[in-house]
Image (cartoon, rainbow over all chains, first blue to last red; front, side, top):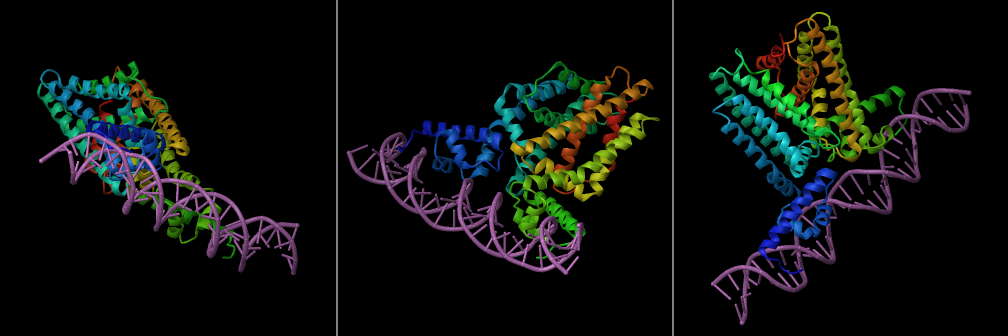
Length: 205
Length: 205
DNA sequence: TTGGATACAATCGTACATGTATGTATAACG
DNA sequence: CGTTATACATACATGTACGATTGTATCCAA
């Protein structure tokens, strides 16, 4: 095989990542062999080992590829909705997560891999710790939004911003989990919107 | 090796299940070899293959061993608290789940295996479907309790029993998930009790 | 008491998955 | 325009998990 252009090499790298996501999703991380990923990508194991150290390295690459934009979008929504109605901002942010998961199959696949197709043990425990960190960050962001809502009298009196933020994180975690657990891809139905709306409405003054 | 008594055989079977739970928990399901389980149990692979068809069969046995009592206890609590204050019954039921997880290490290990140390693909997908079924059953039970609360004017007006039940399921799912995600075993702190209390208080009239 | 049936232990062959080492043609660079 | 690093493909050696088979000592039942 001849040497490729830098651009071509970068493309094969992305092909490998896409193939890895697909095979991880269908076979699970542990049963996925680099040989199968290579076949799916139309290359040989040599190419995979050239671009990535081992399977773990590839797994991290798949993760970095899809989750970062989703988390960033949540933060934006939360921040720019801070001035008018923080609670509405939170509701929009929650809803947006599911609309993204509905519209972006690769993002949904990545999430399903992380939740249902990976065993968090040994060298994969750092991923779990990072997820923990993301949840803590989200809790802090939500706490700030709830506090701003409280300052404007929008939050139901007697509620602790920190506590309601924690509960929202748990609600979101469980909802995403159950959203992805179904056999066929879930959809953002009116009932689902009502569920999120109710979660916020319960906290509104 | 000589033949054992029926009682002795049953004991080795339990030893194998306990060993499997331990090794599953530390290595993850896929990296667990029947040889390691056998060593942990103090027997050979021959004994494991005698009592169980394969690793999947053993996995199911581990699951059946610990989750059934926990689910049953939840149902009992929900039912016998139905007469006086259904909302208090739900709160007790939720709290009980975490106290059980705190006090029963084997139950916590089993839950951690199911959530973080297993890849739900191919022959393991039935387990995921069964978890879905359990969540749906719980949602129905909760819906009944919320409806009884509504009939007695204890539920906040304007709330749909089905919707609040769904949200409680998601809250519980996420809370259990995050409860188990931490590096060291979590504890039922006053803050945790306050969180559950808040979840119910938000729904009380 | 005696012939299975039981409850394992020990052994074997097979099948892969991994990592590495090597080959090689070409793009990039000075 | 020659050299060198690149971007892979190919081949090889190693380890290891699995399933099946076989052996065997004992319990249980008739």
